[in-house]
Image (tube, rainbow, N blue to C red; front, side, top):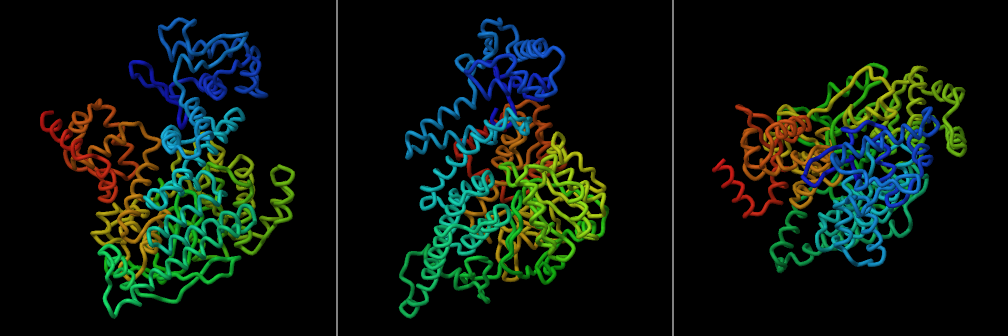
Length: 634
């Protein structure tokens, strides 16, 4: 239930929620969410149908329970089914079937009793790759379980990140990132990311994560970071500044520190410095920034910038403007001068946020850019409030009234807003989770002459969501960048995936890795200009993000091609012990997600050397030797 519904029987046969009738799946979901508690037929029917109860709800419910029993446990007598008839209702009995949600709840209780037991928290993270009931995330019955799992998962991620910040800062950074993506308003996550960035010697990471915290709190809650968060930022930057200055003081007598520290000092000394800039907002404190940065966080974070910076893309045959942005010129033109409703789609790391951020930079008086609520939820009209403030046409009194009364905006209110926005563009980044009211408001604004741009992962991701009702005049799918945009070595390492361009340190004109990612059309947060630990963390995180909706065979294929190199599909099937049809289906998805590229004779290989190396690092030498032997004898 954690993620998409998947049922595995004792023989290893798999079935997904998509293989069940929709109402049967929902009956199963309600019983699983309330496992080991008897649900009366009236309560079940009310949860599944709500106000749309069929004429004979009890008979319909009994029919769907019968469908579930036959489909999930064929040949098993009703008396032995894990869906038990009891006291005139039904119960999901976890003593007859394992349920991941029940295991997570049990682990959460153990974690609460034992604060320092990390293996329990590792188990929680392992159990919950996603929030439960993805297929029915908007259902009222699913909301309590999703909120419960989110709180447990965020706490586990942060409890693991805290000790890792000193011992394994790259992992701590990844864990903190996942926590803040789930819950953007937890300052603890941002503080741990700042500490991990400082442990990596990255002053820019400290600045970036503080700024992400400040923006998340200001845009959606209208508050500033706490004094604890602000003072932590100042202390970390002061410590990093002191550490950076220390080699200079001892330079006349030589640097007697160990080799690793000396190399770090050499890298700092080689960085050209410029005027320090700060975007600290309310704090007003000047923050030392060694190099000018342009930072973008993809997949659910509004873009933020410290300053510009050139990338030297001219050497690669592309052209970079003064802000260092290359590529995507056709897409920018379509967004700037195209039709009324444009959808921008692409997987995590494709540069959606950066493209919309660039659109706003080029026409700040015409483009307002808000951020959708994301899977963790947010204040409903935060996206519109942000866009209106950016355009200098705030309507706080109207929005506050609607939010206080928990209602949609009235037609007269929308007409007044639209009248102020003549000729403007309202863009919503990460719009996948917009609710039905927000979509209706966007459609009304469009009908009154406001142009609308939204971004999300894939069209399939909104098929059952309200955003599907916002018909697109144009859909822009962001493909990887090409040889006209990037040097050959950066293209080979990153595969043209914007998020990885930054991780390769692909900028050539004195800009940082983050500036390189922005120059290339956007990068995920956490990218580092060539720092191997951060680069590997970014690559692994992106590969996980792009495969999380795929069948398990997809990840196994990524592992096989990382360990063995270019392989034909029949070799993948033999080396992995997979069915050929299963391999072909997974390869289709991996190619579509720009993780693999096809070669002659039905062969495939990794698109990005950086992802290949990150995945290969998880495979032991013994396992790799075994795979090569199996392939040789296949």
